[in-house]
Amino acid sequence: MIENAASFFARYKTDEALRARVREAMDAYPGSLEIREPLVEAVLLPAARELGLDFTVAELRAYETKEKMKRLSQSDEEYFASIEDEEGFWLLDNGWDYDEDVLRSGEEWGK
Image (cartoon, rainbow, N blue to C red; front, side):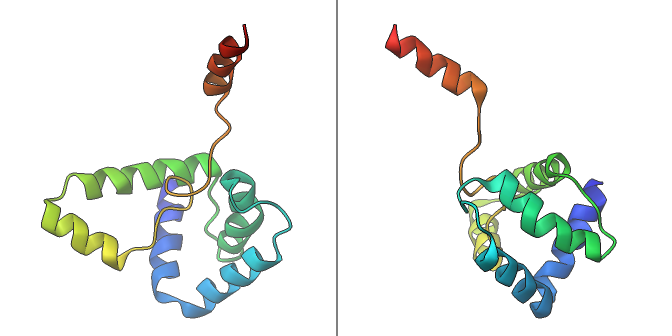
């Protein structure tokens, strides 16, 4: 649920122990930190689940998109003040996505 993602990140912002637990899990994560969806599934979602705040990668993406759109609709002054206080988004601001359409278009270059 998108509401669970919102609740998780509200808690994440104020709970240093939760942030430390997530950082520790990231440090132990054996995969690439650049491939964000598997990282979210292995690190963030289990931490949220332990708190009873289940959500999926798709719900996280919807939450982050909603929050990013809110930020972009702010005045420049409000926007820059808010990004100084906020961490980046887990999916939207980090790594890369596996986008088949982009890969298919790249195949045309080889023809």
